[in-house]
Image 1: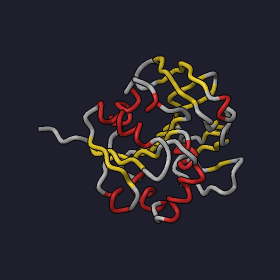
Image 2 (image 1 turned 180 degrees about the vertical axis):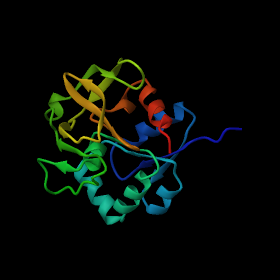
Image 3 (image 1 turned 90 degrees about the vertical axis):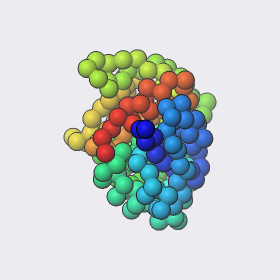
Length: 193
């Protein structure tokens, strides 16, 4: 019998339940993470969308920042929307957040606009030899304004980079968990650790 991958989902605030549902479709075991010991029991980590400043405060108050950094050194981490903000090196329009600096990118919070400006579109992803279309849901999404030399661009929408990867760490400006497709989750699970 093949062991099910154990996917940890940071569960302080945000859409962690939607991530649980998406990984359940893929027969993964999910664990809600709120402490370093819960994190250590996982093979993958998802930092969900939500309110980045709130998630940041919980990460600080529970002393999870350093454990997440150690986890990312040899296990895959994925941040969606607010999770992307927390994984970035720089956040240009919010000095209250202390990002984890696991992705050499600069982020503008709400770079696509406020809630009213949220949208669904079809972008392009490059997980294999050629680009493929993927439905993307953007909700008060962050915009990448600068990308470091070690960061790989894996997807775009409306002429903007919306998926980036650096080593074991990957981030999306949009919410793959809000669509019927599990293609992005399958790609995340394929990352070696």
